[in-house]
Image (cartoon, rainbow, N blue to C red; front, side, top):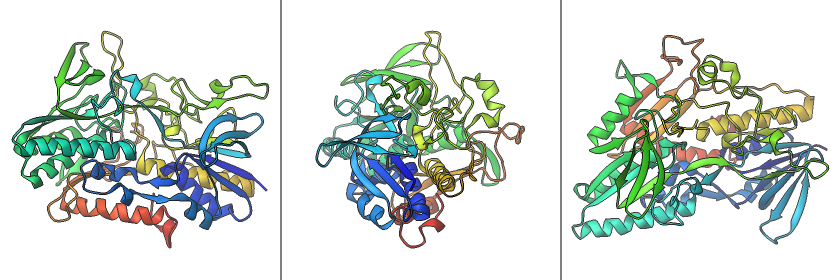
Length: 477
């Protein structure tokens, strides 16, 4: 009987667990290790953060799903991986016991460490800038937002700054959704004139989103995502600054360095800034107790897989095969990584270093649909290895399509959403040399009420799919 262990029940790990349980769960031992008892549907936390959805509607209990899908569940925190002797050390959250969980195949899908400490003063613990990166943080953001609402009702004017809180941050899309939902909520409350809404980002241009921006068809014309997003900001009366790497925040100001190496600051009354992501810190211990982390992870803690690392950016962009296709560690072939946990070979967006040596570059996103796709690929490949001794599935991010629906108000009557279809996620300049590396027939942008309906429909269908309910495999990742 093969033993498969998965660490992390986010989009990637949970998707892999569903496929593995469905394919081999009855005959083999599939185990999920997760710090939380619930799955959380993170994309809807933008609504939680303004009080438009209770956090309870974004989660479900994992154990009943895994019981149904023949997956063992350990509610606990993985602390060590012993790749030579093939076991994971887990601190059980229910009874505090330390246990060893053996494996033949290991999938690391831990998601990110939220590296608030990489920016001085950042994080909800300081109560300067808020976050919507965890459920408790989204609830805290909602509460602080409501406090500001009450002050506005008394006639006070406020300045809200939303964006990224580190020169190397990612997930600009989530911050964009948050600021546009705030706009819509304030309009609904009749308070929009009381707030100066301001966007602050490490992107090269508005609409870069860590994917180098896109050129796409919009209403029959080719339009850049910079023009598309800038038009939204203008329509919503949102001022914006890009090319800014935040390095400090206090109770009044956000301090940044710009592309030219100049230092400045932006004042605020309420802010929500996405932190830098790093790999979850795990100890990787060899057979004699030695540290073997350099064989498994890079300096940021992300798991090294079958990509080509350390290529100069220009060479990376001209080599689509530099991006991994199997998400398999090159040293330990029975270790895989998926979602944010895997180490990309480099940035997608054009990197920039200031005269002071600061790297201000949007990190490549590996969340949502991308995570689900990779989780499915790895899950099916591990099932193939168990049953047939070979892998039959592969997909690089230079071959992968992804759709992003950025909510701009949750109302199904006067809400909106920006719908962006990208193919491929990472530009392939060999196949599409005259189209900014992407297929202009598939890549598309649209905005309107239909997107708001689709966003809500996706919330409902994914909560159905991820609970393994009838027809779950028919709903794409």
